[in-house]
Structure formats: structure tokens, C-alpha cells
Figure 1 (tube, helix red, strand yellow):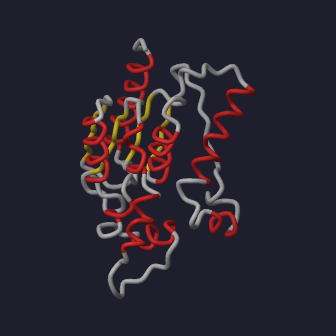
Figure 2 (cartoon, one colour):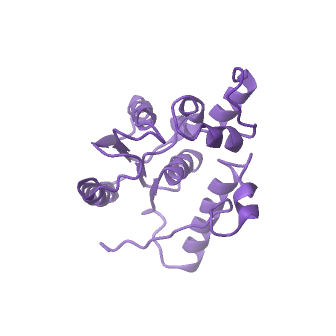
Length: 207
């Protein structure tokens, strides 16, 4: 479609490969999953006639978490990014999401609603967040957000966009009256059209 080739990655920790695969990612989030995606990128570039200066990133939720990590950890590899309802700051998400347990275990500690969160736990969550690398991002980034998202509240994407603007990186926020999945027909169609437009606009710009 529109001349794009699509690579969909079943990184270690993805569902569909058994419980052992899912549990592999605990304490390795932001490292193993990101490296798997970069390895897949490198393999595609090695095996197929893909232009290495035209690489785009597209993902939502944990996929949004991954594409914002990839653009921060490998700023010279990827050219343009579209991120849907991304997790960008696990530490602040912990107190406002309906999956606080995910925030805890992915950062490497047990989830409990008893007692305060320790400084070490907050630091662990911040370290595994894309915000830890936002200062390195170069790729123009569009954020597709749902105003009713209770899983990854939309302020996550807004904060990321503010950081990008402060660093001089082109960014745009598309806010939809929808929840985490952005699956209502108006939101989904507008999202897809504007994602393609964002890619084409910035791929066609001169360096």
C-alpha cells in the first residue's frame, strides 16, 4: 500500500509463543524487546532491497512504547515515527492506569497496593521509559491519542510531544474522542490516513 513494505515483529515477550516467552520480558523490557526489533530491522536491510534512509516506525500501546524507544536509542536509523497511545513514562503511568501491575513487573518488582512506592522502584520505572531517551530523538513524530484512554492516559503522549518540541523535533498530536484502541470507525480511518500522510510528508522532505 502506497509503496510501503511492512515488517511486523514477534519480539521475545510477545504473546502467542507460550508462557515462557511472555515471562522472558520481565526485567528486560526496553532492552530485549527493543534489541529484537533493531535486529529484525538489520536483517531486513541485509536480505531485501529496502532503502535504509526511508525507515518508518509505527506502533500502538506497547508497540508505541517500542517505537519511541527505537527512535531514541537508534536516532540515526529511523526516519519518521507514528506512535498510537504510547507508554512513555512508566513511573507516572503507574498511578493513573488500570494496569499498574504491568508497570511494576515489567520494571522488575512485585506489584502491591500496600505501602508506598520506593525511590528505587520509581527509578527503575523511569529508566525503562522512552522519556529516558527523548533527548536523542531526531525523527519527526506524530502522536495518535485517545482522550478517554484509561490504559495509557493521553497525558503520556502530550508530555512526549512537549519534550520533542523543546528539542526542536517536528511533532504533531492527533487527539480522538476514543479509548485505548482507537478502534471507532471515525478514529481508525482518520488515524490511518494521517499516519500515511505523516510518513509521506516527512520522507519526501530533503535532509
